[in-house]
Length: 162
Image 1 (cartoon, rainbow, N blue to C red):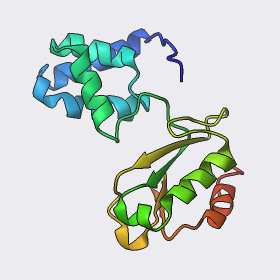
Image 2 (image 1 turned 135 degrees about the vertical axis):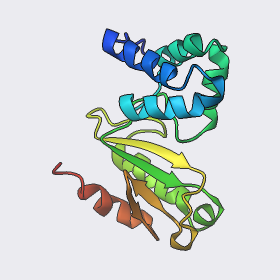
Image 3 (image 1 turned 90 degrees about the horizontal axis):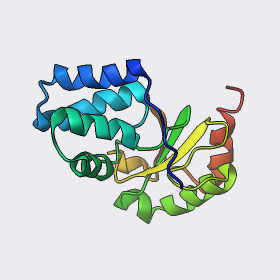
């Protein structure tokens, strides 16, 4: 996936600076700062990471390392309905990969991508803590348990008229 350079608007730049200031430019608050920024912008493109690094006076590579390490953070915009398939041990053993393949097929996108209309984005998680319901799919805040590949089309249809 090619990196699209984005231009931060003055108010976005100010929000990033204000957020860093709110946390006293403390490098130890990096995760909290990134959480707040992702909640505001929906994702953390490299341009945002660079401003944070400059404000906290830490290497951009350190910010990038945190963003890429934690599955909560994303560098690509999420769809209106972010789909997360759990690939933790219980879900994996019970066929989560087949469900992931079916979502990829139905939406015609790869993991980490969004549909052209920005309605859906597709990602994987390590464990959502609902192992008794394995395999688990989350769409936004809604959890679907014991999902079978045949259920994928029906699940997606719930969001079609939105």
